Image 1 (cartoon, helix red, strand yellow):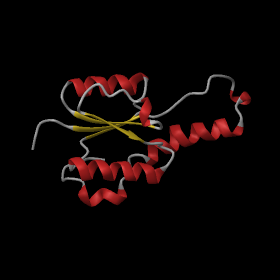
Image 2 (cartoon, rainbow, N blue to C red; image 1 turned 90 degrees about the vertical axis):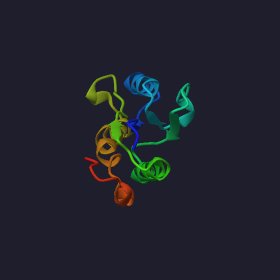
Image 3 (cartoon, rainbow, N blue to C red; image 1 turned 135 degrees about the horizontal axis):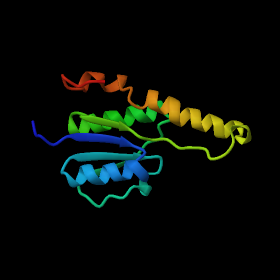
Length: 128
């Protein structure tokens, strides 16, 4: 086994996610960089694999995880970074804006790392 790791990073199109992907790929590790729109991902390094992932969609998260495990045999590091903030008073938030916050920042954190469909392919020693 190589000492290079396979990373899966959600919310990689900007901010902390983008900075992490850039740093990790520059160090030589493989990074699966995800965002709702894969076209928004910068892929200047050969070891960055862009993939579309909306963390609000558990079936999409499972499909991405399965594809990564099928291609690379494992996921060594999961950085569940996807999220966004609402700027303004809580009372001004519309129902759909609030639901988007909950779906992304709460359920996305819980659902994205759940990989029951590919659990049998996860190598020994993988910690959840």
